[in-house]
Length: 215
Length: 221
View 1 (cartoon, rainbow over the protein chains, first blue to last red):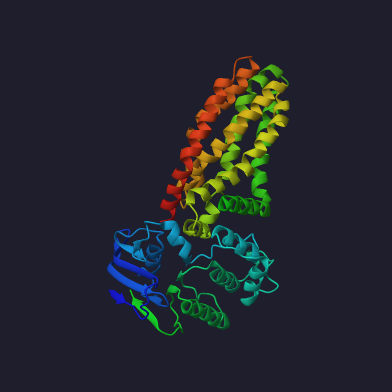
View 2 (cartoon, rainbow over the protein chains, first blue to last red):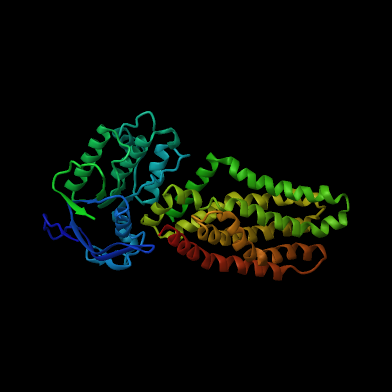
């Protein structure tokens, strides 16, 4: 399995690269000798059946789990070498929303900006939540929000996080048609600004120039 | 440093939204320590003798009650992954969580101790020593407990296993903590006990956060 993506070739381009990844879960080998390379402005769509190892691959790319063999490189350096620098550039959204149910949408957003070491004013935080249709709900505890509204809080986090590399596991789940469109626009804005996106989805994703990795 | 304050603030805010969980542990401490004078009766000499041991054992057990909350909720909703992936040293964040746990589960015990001590007819000298030992000892309980809480993440019936893992590690704190109070009541020098408790605290501060980080990372992988 090899995929090479290089549409942009400016010198300062950011590169995410995986070399010879092998992933073993229990007794089963999910994939072996997997190579991928993605640069600034590229969106990589990882596809495959349930249980084929999409989430495992994303977790390897974030560094949350270690590959059996092979390595993941960010800008020609192994991600294990300077994890803090890599995490500064990385935003990972997994299956679980990682929002604290007892806190409000606004508190969740501000908590993450404090932990992610990003500065965010009250007005900007509110404006971001309003952009994603959460006006009037910013002071409700998250457990009062619907599944789709929780994903909208996460979209607000994506926008405020200022990360270069987005790794998104099933980001389109639970979203209505309008929110799917908004998320696609958000991703396209991010790509246009020179960011990278790696995502999994079972739906068709309407993003131009998307690269597909079939597991 | 900002990250440390941010995580402490976050954990305290979460606790304030769910006060019942914390109050349970505190109530447990108060009730258990109050049951002894009621059960034993008005034998003041006997009560004075057993007071240090009873209060310290109750403190150990009530600390244990709040431990599973340290990482479990964050593990379940995925927030722990986000903490690992945040651009902050994980040791700082875990230390912050331990400090928050101590503020919620340890500090109130220190403040309540004089009230509890009066039930056991402890004199002022013993009460102040009791408070001082709890002040030095309860942070060690939170620190050591964090290892157990991290190791049992995602294990079914984890809290029972955690008690079995952690209670033996609490023995030195119990011995020196209760020992110091007993020594004051019989008029012996307590400086040795305090030195040992202080040494335990420094040792735990120096090593435990790293051990807990390693355990959390194993659980997440």
